[in-house]
Figure (spheres, helix red, strand yellow):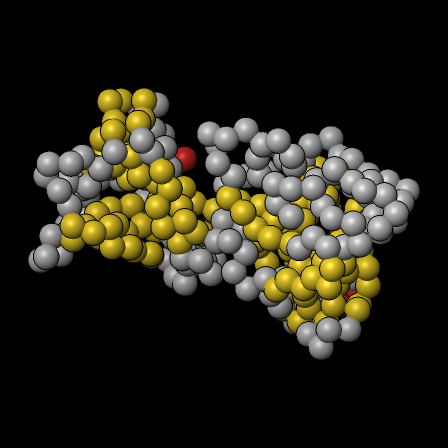
Length: 279
């Protein structure tokens, strides 16, 4: 039997499957809980294909906004994005003794998008190559631990990608970070939007390059250069090249640094990528 709705900011009690706190319905995800014969709780929710969902858990709850001992479970579920309009996960056997509360956070692709990446699934499907120096990686930011290098937090959510996340980039780096294939068949135009955070030594050969490559690995066109220091997370919007239309392509983020100057700079971070077709 379906249980009451709860939202992205609402908490549901595992023992009963009932909502214990919620906010405006329009902000949320329609979700409910059912129980199997073995008393395992199955959390179900209306999902968007390609969406990534975090399930957050708290062992203590005394009211809205007053949580204790919370943590994220099942980070980036499902890791490659939801397959359909409903998703579910087994939360295990419920306990009538120990209270456990759950809520959902959703990272869903915009309607009509050709490609979307929030990195909340850990960057599933992306490939990395490093011939020397630093490497691209995805990582989770811990809200309770202040950052000493790099951005204080991702642009959204808990995950972003960057060069040696949480550390300064190394000299003599050549590192690539390449997206899954993006299908541009039948498209006459498309635009990429993403967010970047930069702390790159300027004028000494250190540079970030974003290129569009076809499915065989051939360069179609370089479309963006990253250099210098940004004022926090900065939105980048760039049209994909006309020569890429009709192809399957990959986005390749390449970071380069020379060996002439030692650096204590954080490098290049990216988050929340989206490719939309031309109107």
